[in-house]
Amino acid sequence: MRITSTILHHLLHLTAALVLAMATATTLHAQQDPAFQQYWQMETQFNPAAAGRLQQLQVKGAYQQHASGFEDGGSTMFAGADMAFRIGNTLHGVGAAFQSDQIGLFAHQRFSVQYAYHWRVLGGTLSIGAEADMLNEKVDGTKADPGDANDPAIPSSEVSGSKLDASAGLWFTHRRWYAGIGVQHLTAPTVLLGATHEIEIKQTYNFTAGYNIRTNNPLFTIVPSTMLRYDGVELRTDLTARLIYQREKKRLYGGANYSAGHSVALFVGGDFHGIDLCYSYEANTEGIGMQSGQHEITLCYRMDLDLGKKGRNRHKSLRYL
Image: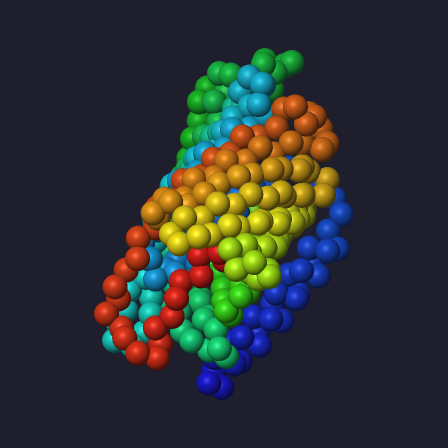
C-alpha cells in the first residue's frame, strides 16, 4: 500500500504541475495532433493507460471532416481496439490503434501498440500505460503553388519518411470520477523526408477528468468532463457536459462542448446492445467561421469479458466514464 500511495502522490503532483504549465501558456499556434471533440469516447487515442481499463473488449472507430466546404480541408480517421486480461491476481490491458490525419499537402499516420497495468489502490484503480508508435509523415509537393518555384523550403515532389516514437500515461478511476494524464511523442523525433527536408515532432501533453452526477430521477445522469492539450506552444481546453438517459440496456445521450478560442459543438448519440453511435458538429468561433466547422462521428462496439476472477475484486464497468 505504501508503494501505490507514493505513486498516486506523484501522480497528483504531476497533474498539478501540468495544469499549471498549461495555464501559463499564452502563445497560440496550430497543434500537430488532431483534437477529437468526442475525446471522452476515445481515451486510448491519447492515453495508453486507458487500454483495458474496462473489463470489456472495445473496438472503436472515428471520422472527423475538417473545414466543411473547403477544398483540401482534410480529414482524420482513427481505429482502435483494447481489452483487459488477468495473469494470476494481476490485471492488464492491451490495445492497438491506427490514425490517419490529412490536410492540404500534409499526411500524418500513426500505428500504435499499447500496454497498461492496473491495480486497486485507495478505493479506486490506478493504471500505468506505455505505447510504441510508428510515425509516417508525407508531404505532397506536387499540390503546392509557391510564389517562387525554386523555394527550397517546399519540395517539388512527394516525399515521405518514418520514425519510431513512444507515448505514456497514468489513469486513476474512483467510483464516480476519473482523471488521466499522458504525454505523446516522448522521443520528440525528427522525421527525415527525402534527402533535404524534415519534420520535427513536438511532445504533446494532455490531462482529462470527468465525474458522474446522479439526479433525482434514476434514469438520468449528468457527466461533466474536461480535456486539456498542450504542445509547448498552444493550449486547448475543452469543457463538456453530457446528459445521459439509460433504461435497461438502452442508453441515449446528448450534450455540448466549448473550447475557448476555438469552437462550440453539439452532439447526440446512443448505445444499443453494446453498439454506441455518436455524431457531433463543431463550429469554429474564430478564423474560418462557424459555417465551416467539423463533422465528427464515432462508432464503438463493446462486449463484456469473463476474466475468470470472482470474489472481492470483481467490479462493474463504468461506461459513463
